[in-house]
Image (cartoon, rainbow, N blue to C red; front, side, top):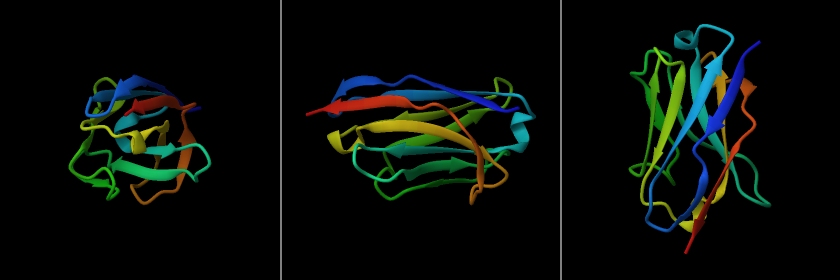
Length: 119
């Protein structure tokens, strides 16, 4: 059974940076596509960034493009989300997910980590 555990969330001021991490266990990490998603209060969950198992292909949603970077360390079975130039609009619970491709479906989800950006 795959388990995903996010960490690194917190409360920061606008303009700051945060780096989220998601530890993966239970299967071969390098064969899994990984994704970050977020859900703000009162809004639907939205895609943030995805990365293929080979770490060569990535994709980003328009709101985060140029500010966020997804990466993975297959030796540590961990995927990261570096978030720079944070704005209050980035406030959400951030979830990582694992699937067979960047396009989904996403079979496994973490419990989420809260990111709050104050103005």
